[in-house]
Length: 116
Image 1: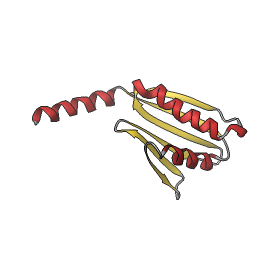
Image 2: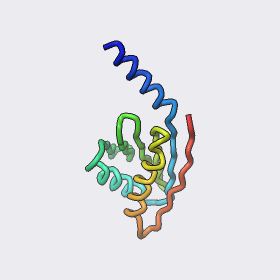
Image 3: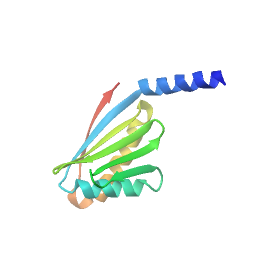
């Protein structure tokens, strides 16, 4: 059993070191609606939490990948933390669904990525 613990610790450490944080911003006055819709939709496949009081949502894709959605009066912000190898895929999932929901509003997501 000690080998398993060491292996798991090394895998966890490696994943954390190779993770990136991507912040996507969407200019919209309807951020609360879109965030709730995104959380609800993705909740069919992954673990999600929506806090109505603070208008903050969390989407957990897997043990090493999650996104936090926050809303202000003029924007929706998506903060994605995940392994570098999955960053493009998960940004695409979030953006594709969000842009689809807001097609009438012609939403655009602007991403900034920060490596740890």
